[in-house]
View (cartoon, rainbow, N blue to C red):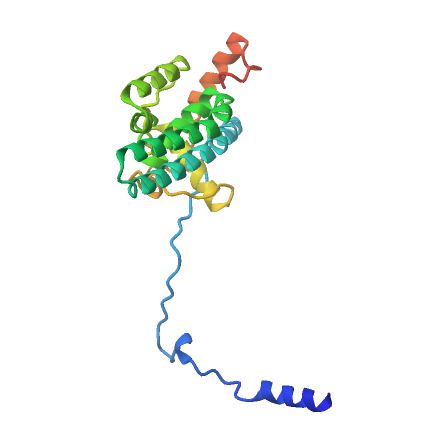
Length: 237
């Protein structure tokens, strides 16, 4: 046993110098060293007009957190569908597979989406455009038909929503707030990051807006709800 341990220790000490020097960087005095880092952006600190505005922002943030996973999952399902359809030559099989995915998506989302408030539904519609580069109306029209998409949109209009709503954080205040919530959540690992398929530079947008948070539209909305005595009801928040 002693002989075995001795021979083992000798083997560990033999030739311990590295052979492959390609894995090392040699820096001589006076040399400059460049290291390639992953790209990331630092967002400026929010600028609120009052402490009350902070409460409204946190309320809105909860809405975005609830809607985003549905838009993210819908985007993944649609991407998988398109990849699969490219491999199917038969029109009949394409229609059959599309119908199967339609039923799956509707079965997966419909019950939970029905429980959403109007604000959450509107955010979801906008995020679908962000994640897929197509409005909810366009996605439905491609999956179903123009007639079906018309009726889906008519139903949404009952709740003062439009499936044709687009996402423009560079010009629309609510969209800017949504993107602000998302980018900060991505950096803090509170939401799983998924790059937008729309072309905009949020770092430039938030710099131009000086990180100011505008929640006046939600203040007005809550004021109307209080006036109508609906502040305790969650159907229209």
